[in-house]
Image (cartoon, rainbow, N blue to C red; front, side, top):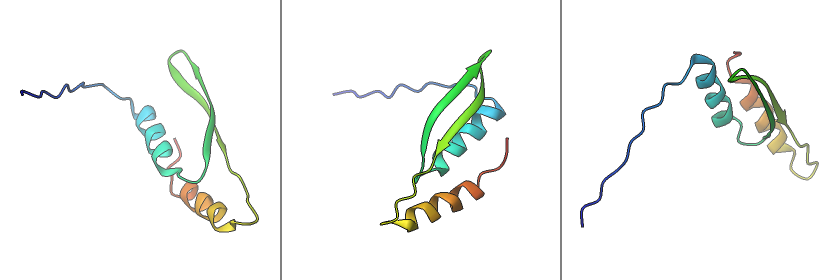
Length: 71
């Protein structure tokens, strides 16, 4: 059986690359809304949940957000 992999090359802008890094870094938070205008991302809503039974997750989310470079 001959298996072939299909590869797609896409050009990603610097801003889109930054967004992908944000999405990759935020493991303990949720991305709620992304607003796109003229094909560009304009706003990104990150939602953090503070669970008093598991405060370490909130702390991890804050630490992750600190590592993200500003766009």
